Figure (cartoon, rainbow, N blue to C red):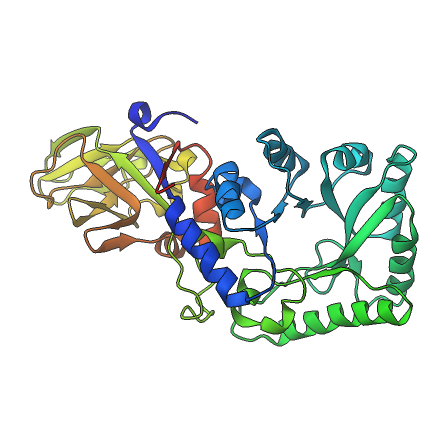
Length: 377
């Protein structure tokens, strides 16, 4: 991942803020246990370090997106239960059982395939995934044959089905009518199983937005993701529900300063021309670090307690900012790309709005190549 001292750009991860957010969520959901979602390297924050904080806060369930992510945690010595939220190949069943990684099973055929790959006498813990409206994975909740298929899955000797899991598609919207429909479908599946003598141990449905806005969906286990990292799921949620602190900041040092004349083009394509004499700083951070090219000439950084506009096209590894109005600026000064300084801030939400995406993508992208510096351990 590199070294911030040699690269000149880094992400700063505040583990104290992470600890605060976990405690906020725990207090909000009261006695409901958490399954901490640490997929995509904990949304770019570093999965292993994030899990250590979750463990200190008493969180003993984790979720990842891939088998490889689960194995990374096992290699780091994490022994807590880990659920793999994306589809897994059936021939990985022996590895999943050996490493105590819990896959989602989305059909009876898939369940039988997993069972057929397990060595004799081996049991694999699973969740039965119910598609309540996301149309991504799971048995369709409204399909008449789903309950019979679930009964058959629960009856398989080599698969230990812990319970039912599903995912909301629109719980971060102001209109919760579709969320209510999904919840109704989910609970109806559970109730139909109970009437047939099957009592799922765990019902897991609530994601970050539902944790904030829809307590009826909390059931036995809630799955906080983006809110762990101090970001809100959308602008539609009531932000007074949780006092969240952003965990990630992104910073870079000025590597070069150049005074340019009026009408000087800057960066690829000559899309930006200076207006008057301007002082242009080069930062060692570009779109392969997560500073998206679509932000070019549409965003700002903080240097010396003042905003400075980014100018010209963002390059793969570098970008330029106009620091003409920053007093006493010099090479080596730190620019805050995302974060806060001296009462000013550039948020993940602001960057997301500038390039028509969501804050999830912003922090995940910054996690790709930038070295991490962990503070407030």
